[in-house]
Image 1 (tube, rainbow, N blue to C red):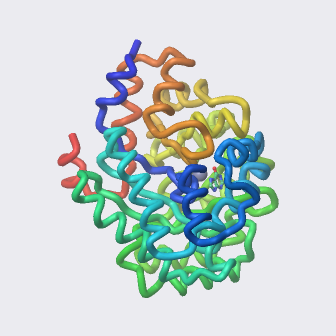
Image 2 (cartoon, helix red, strand yellow):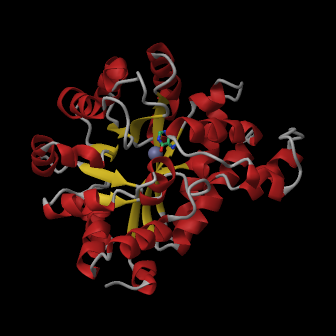
Image 3 (cartoon, rainbow, N blue to C red):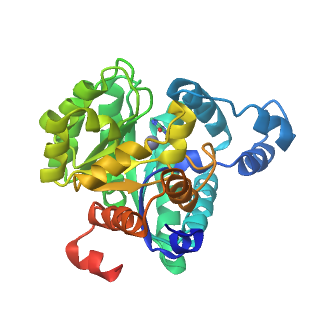
Length: 325
Ligand code: HPA
Ligand code: ZN
């Protein structure tokens, strides 16, 4: 078996964390006061009591509501840099961070404000020993035209963005809805990934679209492919990374999906452990490794393999990879 200390000391890459999902209630209150935004309470206790969700949709409602306090470039910077310091404490050496520009542009914040704040924090992270990059996500419950506009609007900031992802409410929002934007993203030189949240309606079909038609390089969550041996074979052969998030799964599916992770490891699938929305799902990356390791009695070898997989499926060159080993 494995100790907490072993997990804490292990160098890790984090590939599935939403910057907006790192907004702790404390920072939310502080920014509400600074920006004079009424969030219904000034009490941390009372605010925390509103954090109630047990499905993807009920979580997303709280998550989008909370973002109202993010107003200025400094706010986006503070959010990201606060996360990056925590990542460093968790011995995360490399991170690719999701962000949702449409969740901000739709409430009147300029995309420039969002990207400049986040990318400035990513630059400053070098000084604390974290190599940080951004993945811009489309909100899949917004229109395909809105996704396309978001891609065009990000063009002037292309050198600050490593990849394009897809998140938010999956129900009735399949990957193919966004095929044009993802094709354009690939030809513009972006890496691509998509969420396939656990226990979603029509998930296997969504995963097939993402892998076989869109050609994603990773799947975010996606661990339910264990139901389908052909898909397991596909992701194993093509070295598609699967970014699993145990504490998130526990909140939204009442199951960490540890059996699935173990099965995927047995089939040499490059599955990794990540925190998803740590301010909402009870902990940062080491807490996720630890809860999974404890609940499923993971061996040291399995934990090391999960961390190796995180570097191997990161969007870095082979020479960069050796620098972390
Ligand atoms: N799934 C889908 N969309 C999201 C998530 C998630 O876990 N977190 C933030 N946006
Ligand atoms: Zn996610």
